[in-house]
Amino acid sequence: MTKQIVTVPDIGGTEGAEVVEVSIAVGDSLEQEQAMVVLETDKASMDVPCPVAGRVSAVIVKEGDKVSEGDPLLELDVAGGAETADSATTDNTNNSNTEAAVATAPPAAASDSATVSSQVVSVPDGAEDADIIEILVAAGDEVAEGDSLIVLETDKASMEVPAPQAGTIVSITAKQGDKTQVGGELLLMDVVSAAPAVSSATASATSAAVPSTTAPSTITPAPAPSSTAPSEATVVSASQSQAVYAGPAVRKFAREMAVELTAVVGTGERGRITKDDVKAYVKQVMSGQKAAPAGGGMGAGIPPVPPVDFTQFGEIELQPMSKIKKLTAANMSRNWLNIPHVTQFDDADITELESFRKSLKAEAEKRGVKLTPLPFLLKACAAALVAEPSFNVSLHHDGEHIVQKNYVHIGVAVDSPIGLVVPVIRDVDKKGLWELAADFMALVNKAREGKLAPKDMQGGCFTLSSLGAMGGTGFTPIVNAPEVAILGVSRAQVKPVWNGSEFAPRTMLPLSLSYDHRAINGGDAGRFFSYLNSVIADVRRLLL
Ligand code: CAO
Picture (cartoon, rainbow, N blue to C red):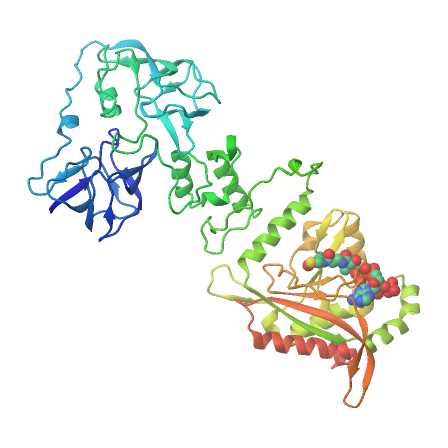
């Protein structure tokens, strides 16, 4: 048994590749070619396979480390005299680097006179039969050495073909959607080189498997993976779903932006995620159209619902979503994902309230207002918010404070032709029933005519959402952040209620109170709800 250090293989001359995944641990028995570590440069991700079978005795690198060719990755106990599959191990006993053949490759001939020559960039070794999925340059473009030219994709991985030298693109032979062939021409470029033959830059970008004996006018740049890595850049890491299709540069960009790629919808071919898709996702999160995950980063780890081609099941038509609908969808998911909801249910006895309301109907008509149960409920909620101020708060964005409000503005969810809107009635605690009914009617009319101004929908402390006119026995409303609670109202029904000696017919109103459990605890909610119910059951209490 000998100890061997496994080092970073030839990675196309890249310095400081990032260790993005370490998939082995001390004590693991590794097969030859088994993936151990995933490295990522700005051009490609690659699995580093184990060059020889053995047992891991030490893991030298950790995720996030930056490594270059020859740096130690791990130490292996190898059965005596085992031959390494390639140059990626160093015998610990004599520390001789078996990559000498690569390291000592003859330097390119120097030349004093710079010449411009046309160079063909061909399909990299090992990238045959890949799809050409993106052409990143056009004729006339100037590129620097290492700039990505073309993106290829096999069924396992995608890779970017880098420019082997700085130069100007002359023509593009490759076509998006084509399949690559062994040594097939991708594009032609003019390069300025110190020598007409393959330059040292080319030599460093050429892997050991692509010797510098390649015809001088043809450059076959190795995509970042070396001959010791699989022939394609493996872009699927353990932390990101196998279903994610994205190039290495996009993955790197996504990591920099803390975006979990599983949450991004790809618009490229076969759902491939492009940099623009990541940017669009970030934009949506920043503008509040998409839920920012609770953890603060972009990646909530919640996989998106995969797109479905509904035409395979029958005829469909695509209808555009209104702006309000899109905004509601974004706000609902933001609130649903960010707020730990609790919903409590109760039935309020509105028998007396209903007879009082009916007794006021004639007067309401005279005043030109419609008196539904809602203005009464608004008044009762305002009283409960005053009695239980723990509900009249918002969580401060610094995470250190609670904002206690000394005003009582209440929003009412209105189902309008353009979508769900929530106009806010101000100072509900200070207004009488008639004034509230009139304010409410005015706002509902404005909402239905699509005339609400942004200020009409701002500043709410609490929301009332009534589906009472439509039916239903209960629902769980979603808290309308930054508020911390919402009351759902369902359809009142006459029910037999035990009064201690007999069942009496009572009009019972089903209520559901959802609250943000970060701001409100169960005790507060219990007190708020029972006070609310007591006021609804006997509106004379509003005078107390
Ligand atoms: N139980 C029984 N009847 C009720 C009732 C209840 N809980 N609430 C209202 N009614 C009655 C009213 O009294 C009225 O009958 P009368 O004309 O005989 O008095 C009738 O139902 C129609 O009421 P309305 O709809 O005109 O008025 P409203 O005050 O109840 O509601 C509004 C107004 C704007 C809140 C409502 O129309 C609406 O848009 N609700 C949708 C809310 C919503 O979509 N919420 C989102 C759900 S998920 O969070």
